[in-house]
Image 1 (cartoon, rainbow, N blue to C red):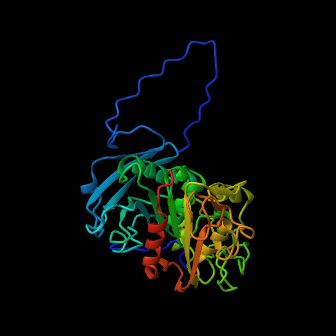
Image 2: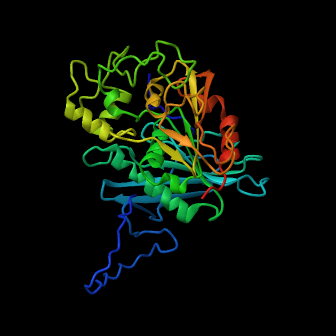
Image 3: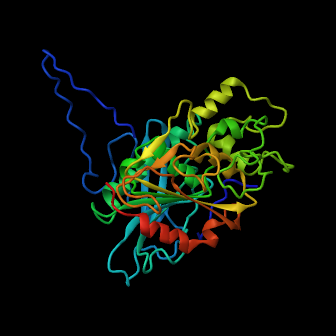
Length: 392
């Protein structure tokens, strides 16, 4: 089974400085270099990480994305990763819409190079009236191009979201939200768990979450079966563990396992006959979503919905238990064992405003593996319409 398959359509920490009184004369900072992107987002740009519009969208971004009326090519740079490009395809609300309910970034699975349109033609039409911002990376976003650290590579998405928040969203008062499928769900979880996503995104929607929760567990052949310790209470008792690339595969070095090895630069991931060393375990967890010592978080400005298939689940769900805990689809605040809780100032499904609650988690018994979006586009669009509201 392939935990990284996307749904296809023709398809930063600012160095917090502390000021301290001193008798020394204050240093006069060097004048910043000229920046032609000031107020426009065009290149060159200053920051680490940072994205800028290199004005090559029409020539660099040739993917056919239905409904797109604008194409932007971003150059994303930073000290923790090699420079990468990304295409943004803008699909405006339909003419029947009198307003834009929200700008929604859409992140595909696998290596992020394809276009994700989870709502199909519904999203831009009434009553949803979403402005869809489809992201397609020029190369694998999760391979940092340096030492192989996915957590570092996630700063690429951080820079992209910051650019969209500053230069592309409809207005400073309209919400900015995001949806991600499979590995794209992990891409978004890196933002809210490790980067500054909670400062920028009003609603996050995860579909087929989440293959990057614990690389060390997925790459260790001694990891036990998940059995009933799974997010979706309706999953069968023989649900496979973690990634489980070797089980039932005659060629473990192809498919999803190859992506893990490429992302992390650890060629021993799930290799038959290899015993994972302590140093490999530490290195793999250090770039996972759940790093060593990661503490539970309460999201106060970002709501979170999660949608999964129950039939024939693949390894994304074995990993998701490390984020959301066991039987999270049935959990109440008293029984929830996950790391992420929601406490927002507006009502969120059955959760009253200002009340700490479990993320909205839906497990659909009618779909297989990673086909939730294909089967339930209207449900995803309705969730986004209802919860993509201004919270910042």
